[in-house]
Image 1 (tube, rainbow, N blue to C red):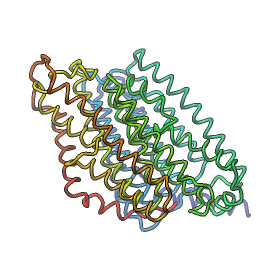
Image 2 (image 1 turned 90 degrees about the vertical axis):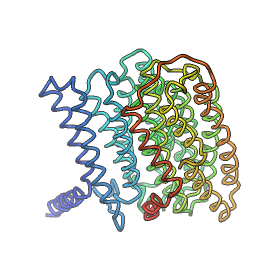
Image 3 (image 1 turned 180 degrees about the horizontal axis):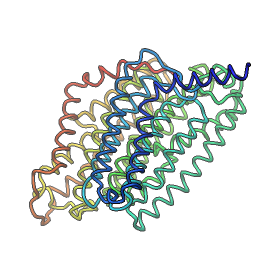
Image 4 (image 1 turned 135 degrees about the horizontal axis):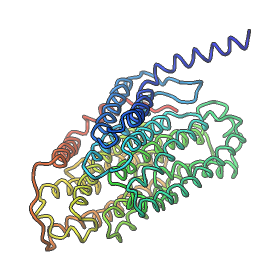
Length: 497
């Protein structure tokens, strides 16, 4: 009788959880539909518009449902504590979905993705599903499964150019990612041994953390965070990024620059709060994360200065924003987390603006930064929009990238005034200095385009890229002059593990 009642209780829990799991079910259904159509109707395999448009529709519906649930009054525990639906995860899921829509729209251009189109769109949807699960996870088992769902799909997507550079990048991604996953899993096993539970949100986990304030706990936490840093491309788990960015198709590169990074950020925030025992731990996790942020920002910017390839430059420059995103985790206040989410939103818009036009110029045989010489006079509108994206990534007004960096530095400084932790001040100073360094490599493309001679035929002003670019630039301008349009929503997010 007890066994029967226990099973019924679990079935009832699952049934109640499914009603809050609708966005993920929509994505899963989309994966099955796309693959089934590719198998059942072979003629559709060459019609990438069909698969792309269908996938875009699936993601839009899933994101719309998530937006509706962004109004949750309190967190909802699902599936016996494996995942949790709350406003924090809902916002990150919507950002990932927007990035997925952007990548799929970029993929609709002719010649970008030429083979295995149903599989390509299904893999994009699978990464999004994994990202949804990862930012909602509060159990170490679920964290590992969700992270592997993202990783395995990403390994395949990285080689979708079906060329040698793509195959090499995909293999390196697989080898490095497998090692990072193994290290993370070992860290989880140590944490389970120390606490006796895999539930990050349980009181038993907090009690276990407080009972074992030892070097073993530091080692376990660092090993576990290796997997999260890998997804964020933060130092020292960053060496995979340049080869992947250079060998993968441009839509995949734009997708990788956002979705795994934000998914890793979401679970890292939850994890740090848990191992910090809600501020009761004697171990200074802020110092550890602060060092990672400082090194990531500095190493990414300095390495980007030396690059000739536009893709590799963006690969190294994407390491620095990982450090800036970590500032919200370092400060670890409700306001700092909200500012981090604003910066992530702005970073998404600016990053896609840049990658859309790098793809545009790649289609015209322009791959390296010196190849841009003289193109500013032939492609004035694309270069104007590309410049806007680069300026926003640098953090210069009048675009929202400036507001994003201003807010996260403000949150960091306010946290320093409260806690007086020297690492917070060091992150603030070096972050400001590195913003100046970023300017030097971001303006190299405009420098070659407008101040160096070259011969190119004039371009057409009417194109989907220019329409897409106009929308993104207007959004970045609007969020600079009226950041409250976005912060009004973000301020409703009260982060709870």
